[in-house]
Image (tube, rainbow, N blue to C red):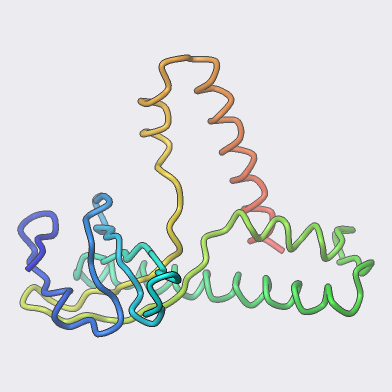
Length: 171
């Protein structure tokens, strides 16, 4: 058994046929995130590591997680539309004046939802979301940067990435 924050116990390893839980990556007020390996990629040379976000089971947290899944699905559809349209018309421009290539590039700044499902355990029903592994969080970057100038550059790069993601998400 693996323990979630606030002593919420979830038997993730035994019930998930597809994902093997390796370690806890972090936790917050709404959820806990675990590093998992996808058994779908059984070839030793092709191990796929992902991040599994397990939302708390309260109704309002579940509702927020379902909204998150809906938004990420919408973003993924737009990303795929841009990608497939690029193969036929590289010079196409949308109503905002952006090329499909620019939109596709902006979409790279958005997390990709690989899977979502519910897990029911003794502490309730948890919404689970599987993402690609991303980098560390902003606070970790700031704490790890002894040089204030380097820290500022990293924060600026992250902020620009967020602007691209927000722009893509609003299209």
